[in-house]
Image (cartoon, rainbow, N blue to C red; front, top):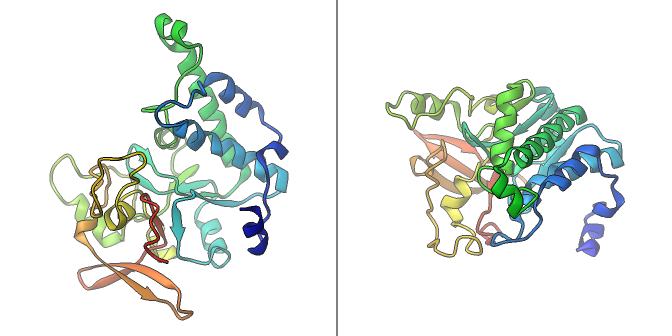
Length: 281
């Protein structure tokens, strides 16, 4: 792994090289690290934000674009840095719906914005530990991460607190589709978070656990009952069945996924490769 990173010109930083913040220490004291059925999955997905802050301090940088290991991006990060920075002075990530953030692509426009998020997570988990019923505290002095105490819900709760100036949405929908969706009757219509905001500037949509699951299916390790492709995430604001998907090549011959609706083609900037298959290789 390290040799491969060296060949790509990447710098590998071990977590042991990083200095833990006070918020990270509070989080660590509050959680139960027993692996359990999910093998510590929710602990690691939430704890990464503390490591990101510590890595930024270690490197002396103010901005960061973080990808989950099962997310693919189809744009040149350096070419889009100016656009991302102009749009998002704080944090930005794709949202599955009003109450769930899927930070497969996570942009930090300023270190202080990430510090605020980590302080919120640490205090929220510590409060959960303190406020549990006595019987639960006797069984385990620390809280177990899971539902609803996980990164997706915690990030959405933080956005509710700080608002769009502190935490924005990466566009997960073309503007025309969002307008059409809002006009549909019934409780399935999303709230006013603005799922297409930023699309005109970035010229692409990001996957929030909807497109990748539809094209390539679910991770069979954690979802053994999942059957093949075309999985519909019922919690997603975007229904991929409303689009036609196609792989095209850019001017350099690189794969570029697109989605079409009403004769209009939209560029896809990221895909959450939930099933971990080599679909694009």
